Image: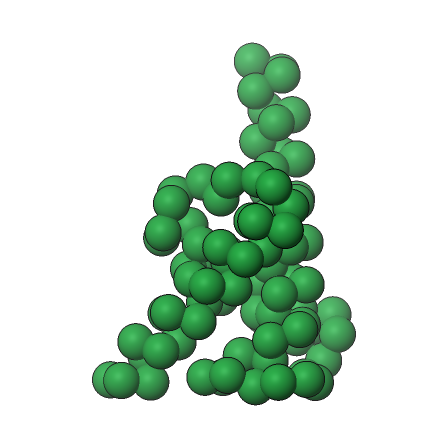
Length: 85
């Protein structure tokens, strides 16, 4: 149970950090940060593999890069949807 809590905390921190680096808000607040960190970790590990520091099942560098890519794509899609409406 404790590793799941750490999983959520690290996912949230990585999602928040990716949003800070891009200067964009993650839709959904804390839950959005957690989702961006977890999904970004998956994307980053698929694109870049597993390397660097490992914290609670997250390889920090690929997870952060994956979260940045995810937030960039989601913000681009949301922005284009707002312009189309």
